[in-house]
Length: 587
Image (cartoon, rainbow, N blue to C red; front, side, top):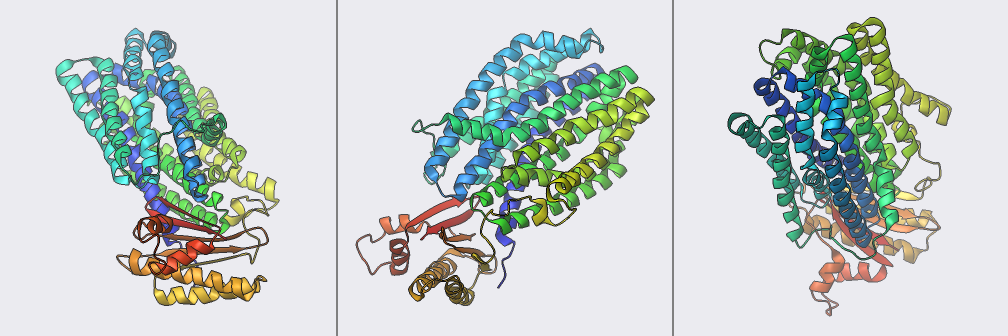
C-alpha cells in the first residue's frame, strides 16, 4: 500500500490551472491591446507599445514580489495549521500593497513624459508622445490591477477557485469591450487603451472582494498582531519573482536599445510582436514556478521530503511536455500568429517577427525545467539559489548572449543568442548542483538540495494513500506495528492505530461522494521530539473540533470516535486549503 501522487498532483494541477488562467487572462489583455493597437492605431503605436513594455514589467516587479510571496507564506502556515498567523500575514501585505501602488501611480503619472522621452529618443517624437499617453493612463490601474492579481492567487488557496477565474475573465472581457469603445467611438489613442485596462481591473477587483462575504473563508482582514517582520519575509520569499520580472524588464530595455541601433524601429516592432505572441506562454511558465513554489512551501512547512520530491517531478514533466508542444506549434504557426498583430502592409516586420518567435520558442523549451527548479527552491527557502538562477535565466544570459553578438554581427547574431541563452541556463543549473553536491545527478531528491537533517530521518515516518475501509483497517494495523518498531509501548501503538482507524474510516464513509475518485493520504511521524499524524483528503470539508462544538457537545455517546481522538490528542488543527481537507493531530 504505497504512497500515491493523487493529492499532490491534484493540488499542483489546481494551482497551475488557476494561476495559468489568471496570468494568461491578465497578459491576454496586453495581447489584445497589441492586436487592436497594431490594427487600429498603426505601426508607430505598435512601436510605442514595445517601448512601454519594460516600464510595465518593471512596475510589475513590485507586485510580483508581493503576490507570490504572500501565497508562499500563507501556505507555509497552512502546512502548520496556524490560521491566526495566516490572517496577520495576509492583512499586512494587502495594506502595504495599497500604499505602495498609490505612491507608484502618482510618480508614474507625473514622470510619464520624461520616461517616454528617454525610452523613445531614437524612435521619433510621435512614438514618444504615444508612450507618455499610455503611461499616464496606466497609472490609474495600478491599485486595482495588483489587488486583483493578489486576490486571484490567494482565493485558490482559500477554496474559491471559480471566483478567482471569473475575476480574471472579467478583466479580459472588460478590456476587450473598453478597447473597442476607445478605438471605434472615443478615439482616445494610447491614453484610452491604458484607461480601458484600468477600468477592467477595477471591475474585477470589486467582484473578487465579494469573497470576503463568505463565512467559511480562511482569510480575514485584521489589525491585531501585525508584524513588520512578516512583510519582510513575504518580500524575501517573493524576491525571486521580482528578479524574474525585473530581469525581463531590463532585458526588454537592452533588447530595444540594441535593436534600434542594428536594425531600427521595425526590429523593435517585430520584438514587440514576439513578446506579445509569447506572453501567454510566459504566463504558463510563471504559473508553473508560482504553483510549484506555493505547494512546495506548504510541504516544506510540514517537513515532507517525499512530497517535495514528487512535486518537483510532476512540475518538471508538466513544464517540459507543455513547452515541447508549444515549440512545435511555434515552428509551424509562427507566421499566421504574428500576422494577427500587424497590418497587411508590414511585410518586413512580419518576416523578422516570425524568426524571433521560432528561436524564442526553442529557448523557452530549453529553460522550461528550470522554472520548476526555481519554484521548489523558492518554496523551500533556498532563496539564494533561486535568485541566482532567475537572474541568469531572465537577464544576464539573454542580454549577453543576444546583445553582444547582435552588435558584432547584426540581427542574425542577435537571434542566435536566444538559443545560446537557453543552453547556458540549463548548464548553469547542473553546475550549481555539481558545486553543492559534488556530483552530477538528475534525481529529483538530489536536485532539491535539502539539508540532510530536513524532515524525518529514515524510519521515523510512515506514509500511505487509501480510499477503502479495508485499506484503512490495514493501515491502522501497519501504523501500530510501525510505532512498536520505533520503541513505543503497546498502549501508545494501540492509540495511534485507533486514531488512524477512526479518522480514516469516518472520512471514507462520510467524506467521499465517489469512492473511486476519493483519496486519503496519511503521514505518521514518530520520533524522539515529534509525534504527529497528518490526514489529507479530497472529500467533503470536515473540521472534527468544530463539529464536536456544534453537535452534541455534552453527549459522550455521540461521535464517540471523533471525541476520543480530539480528547486524547495534545492538539488537533484543521485547515481546508486548495480544495482539500488537512487535519493535523499533534500527540
